[in-house]
Image (cartoon, rainbow, N blue to C red; front, top):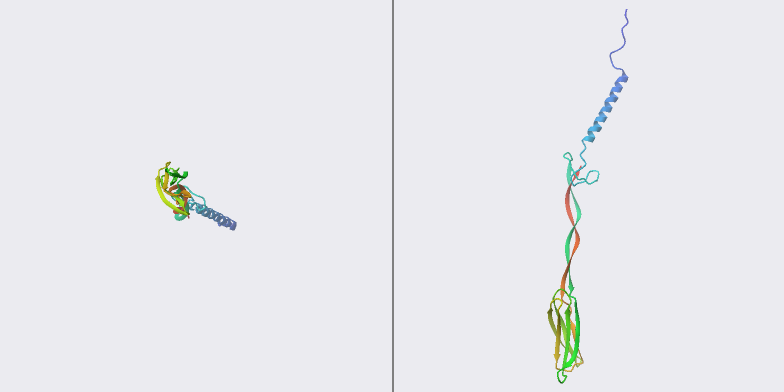
Length: 191
């Protein structure tokens, strides 16, 4: 009688374990590769990547969302001040005149040294017996011109004067300054 073969046509337990381990490795590799390839592109136009870096390009498969932000934007503005015109007071004189020397005269010259014209005023007068005899006079002076203010009085005076009056004429002086304003903008960011 012939002996029957006990060899089975089935798989051994070692082979089954190897096949399961191999399939598990293939599944893990597949999940790793498919997971990394399905992540969004990190670059979005004028936005910020999800790794925090600024981006300059955007591909079609980059999922984005709009995000508002604020920044300080410079702009130029004018600031203006009123500045007194440059001038000088010269040639002050206090003297008597006429044949009998019975007239007292007070005079002074105001010189507009500025490049802008303006109206200058003076108080011109005399001190007679301890009291002021005064008059206010005004004249418009073009740039780089002068005017002599005069007053004469038939009297005997102890002194005379000719003084400019404040406030002096002014001009507006402007300059450009850089200021900052808060601007709200929108950018695309990856998510």
